Length: 603
Image (cartoon, rainbow, N blue to C red; front, side, top):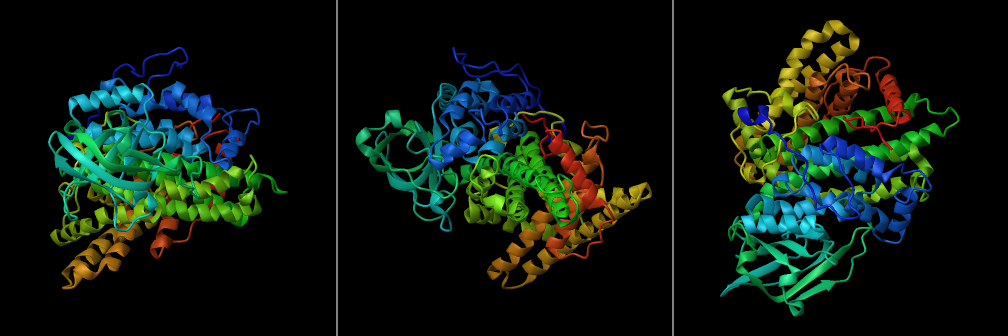
């Protein structure tokens, strides 16, 4: 991890889909493309904008895809963002991809999935384990406008999206597949289904395989697309079903080796979790916070955030920056050292989903009756309340990440017993946009690496930042307060390790899942705190927004909120912290800047 985390790969000239008469000329690097998409989609509150909230909400009410906006994204070549540059697309690092997707998710979470990111979730299996023909053909299909979706394997504890599965039996020249799934995004529109199919009985690691099911190569009699399913959230996305009956599948449709499906899920879900967190959840919450600030500005006092309302909005702003710190660290880890991303990616998804779900409730209280408005001014908020839980796969997503995180508690226990603090993750992980690297999907690993890497190094970054903050106390009371708070969190890291060791020493530790899940909760909040402190430490004080990220206020407020969630004895905030951070939030709002780490100019 040392070398791979400190040296990013270079990039070449922009590639993309073949130019057509309606294609748009697109900038080269990821941040420039993100700004291009933002301008392309235009002011969401302009009544005459065909891609604005009026049009998007009207399509959602009709349970339809906003056709004009989907066509615009097609002309932009959104599919090229999901194809590696070596195969003719624009994909290099997933941090840059998340930036490109945020303008879409800020406007319509369902559109971001239905017209975009689901294709990468499917294609990432091919980029990870496909042979050269499969990789080339998948790239050409995506760049040519083909639509891909993914058929997940069944989970015992899951929602409708993960329920149902397919089975395959070997026959001369290939396989015969049977099965049915009721709720699959784009099942009624997809050309190719990347499918997790049961090829062996039981729940062992070799129970499933992955097949690339091209409907053009399958007999029509064996394939039946089921009617669209009505969903409460993401109503504009096409959720439908697919039934396969005695469907012959050629042998070359197998991706990777037979029985490799569970391993491939563990490898590729790392990318999915990071992008859902860093693209959909952070992007959607940016808009949710903007609705609340807008509502506050319509009060009799205008946009002056004092009192409880100001404290709530400042707190959510601090949480959003902290969640983005964690999300960006997870994205950059995938780009720089993907072999170490298994546990961190699960921690990112778990923490970001939980924190932002709580924040959505706080914002609803600020909006009051406006939160139920279905018009173009505030209707996007109630849509986000419905869409964001679906984006995170709700409780199924939580169970999935816990399955990865609970075994990692043994590593923490070992670290405490051995007295090894571990090496800190490098600054490159906590410097958004500092250095673009190309994600090598083949380096994704289904097994956690040695205990000095990944999340342990993130916790080590918390310990290191806490020690260094002691030297900042002389800069003023807020710096001293942040140093005190960081010390509290450093003590909690050691306490967590001791609790993990004590849990595993108990003879009945195998039956203590509830206790283990409590420790996972605490662990993920500590990872979030570590990312928050590290991003602040590595931020540029001369940045365009006045060096907000380099100042102590947002980290101080975020860690105070984390500490209260953990039940820690946290010091009182110095006077004026929430008020001053609320003022910085207003500055971004009035200046037309995003509320995330990048502070991007908005249309």
